[in-house]
Length: 131
Image (cartoon, rainbow, N blue to C red; front, side, top):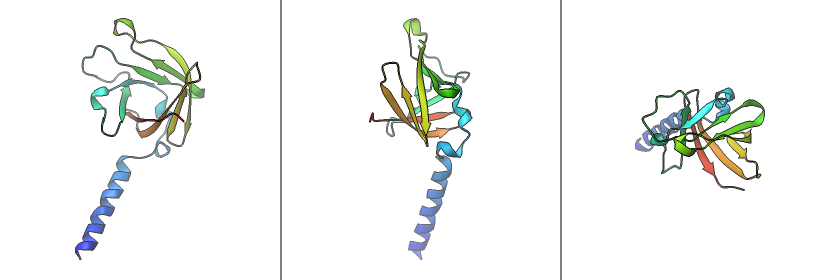
């Protein structure tokens, strides 16, 4: 019976993993529509995951944090770190297909991200190669 117990354990681990890493389609897409700020302390460099929190989150002290706003109807506002640790403002466009977020800038350069996790309080993105 040791093989059966190993299969049961593996199945339980898979089910637990699936429940903690849902696709964006399992969530309310409206959670995207807010101002997100980099929570670089939570990034996972092994998985290449970037973590973002809402603008009001209690971040530890920092010299500056990049962020972005996702608005309805395709408006994406990049907020890169600017002079004196403030933030810039760059209007771009976004689209979403399944769990893939695509951002297109003024010069038509494209950035793609897989949405790993999405909730009202946390957004986890994995940068994808440009097509």
